[in-house]
Length: 198
View 1 (cartoon, rainbow, N blue to C red):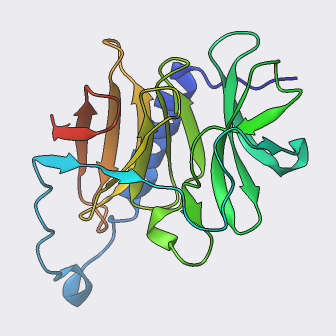
View 2: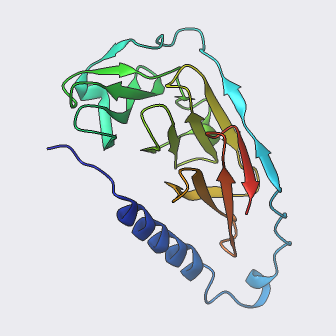
């Protein structure tokens, strides 16, 4: 059975994440409470292109179903997206037959061990052309042209705790500060190339 992540489940996951992050800061007192002021979140985060690295799979390469793990997000009954680990790299993969077969949907998003802040563990889709991956690191990777070009936005002052498609069809990210004190909301209206503090 295919699993489809609904917007309600994503919002619920975000609320749980915010509560957990918030609870982590309760009960801190004395010297432990004296921390340096958190860096202000930037007003704009600009993504950089992800290029194919030597030794990684080309776009459109077939991937064994066993390599596909975690959630799968479908835009209709046949077309869906997931993440796959092949060799020492992590890829976004796509299916056009309801999950029977999978192919890489762009370059490797993350090289294991070499790029810990760039790891991703969740995938989402606005449409068949606009897909994004996040979670586990400080980046949101996205494409808005059907996987031809991917961009990686590095949030240096926080960690994305939830990324969703908003009601206008834009990608909205909630980025938590490392100290757990606040969460910033960023919106990308260009499929993940630039993110603006809302």
